[in-house]
Image (cartoon, rainbow, N blue to C red; front, side, top):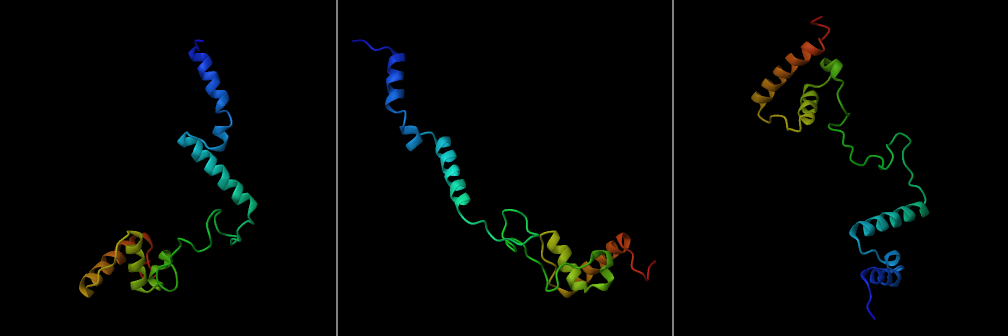
Length: 126
């Protein structure tokens, strides 16, 4: 008996009809099945306790680092802040470390204070 390709495809499809549900062979199907299983696992668990102001999906305090002891300096009133805190904050925003050498540090502070004076003039300059 001769079998056509169409009949062979039908026979194979019928033979392996339930196999794809049990164990997907396609990588994308496996990824979808894994993601669906993870979502079902998460749905069955209790929701995580988060801080009311935290963004969804993030634990409070994870990935948040505050430079210096007291937090971010107020740049609109930079003259009330410690020069080292302001300098460290600005260099932190640039992804760099402030200069260690005292002469270069003083030079960097002088340059930064001139730039801040233009943007937010201190009361003595107004």
